[in-house]
Image (cartoon, rainbow, N blue to C red; front, side, top):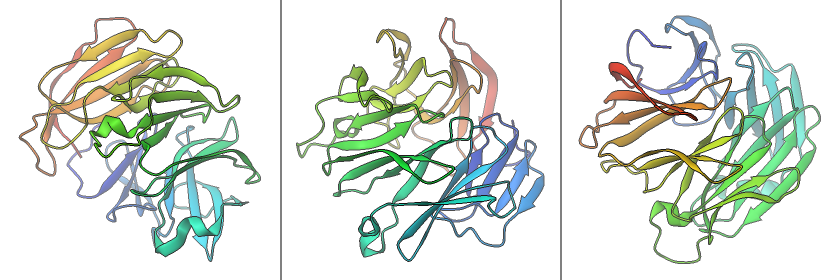
Length: 293
């Protein structure tokens, strides 16, 4: 999809590229919904949710809200009220000091699961896998403060990636010794990676994981690799001089669309070019350049 003009705000694309959710605030819910060409399709009076994201069917939104320490997970269509709202028994003290740092990281209606992550500097990192239909917590792990950079989930909430804080260049010690791809069902490692690797995304079929092999930071080049989870084999890598600008996952198989920008271009809407990453080479670039929304 390509919008007619850049948008100044937070933009989230549905997995299949058919719609966008847009907000003028830094995090939480969305206020406006757009079709693939940027035309308004629905709106909401207030983006009041703690976290909101597209479900993997590209038709529904998953919402997370907190009211006086009671957390609820909801399902809704864009612009409508939730048709399902389930209470999740998360410890209210997680939101201590008024810091609401829990976010949805995946939401799958076919498998009835969502992944929630609490990640805030200097505090333990928490991950929950929740049954959407009734709010039951199926999996919960806590990691000591500063050991992990973040946790990423596959679209179907089957796999999670625990990226060591070493991947950010953190030098204070106590970081996780590896970056780990883990099965939620068995809580067992599926792939152990170098701690300097940071997981960016899983492919839709869960066969590949895209990682940065150097820290992803503004103004410096980013090196990347796509790795086969079953074997650990690197099927694609990038060691050029551009900065990673964003990633989209192909919604039916094992491919990524990777955006790159010149590290010296730190404008709000930098010029980007796009490379398609496939499990079988070559991985071509899409002709032309674009403005990042």
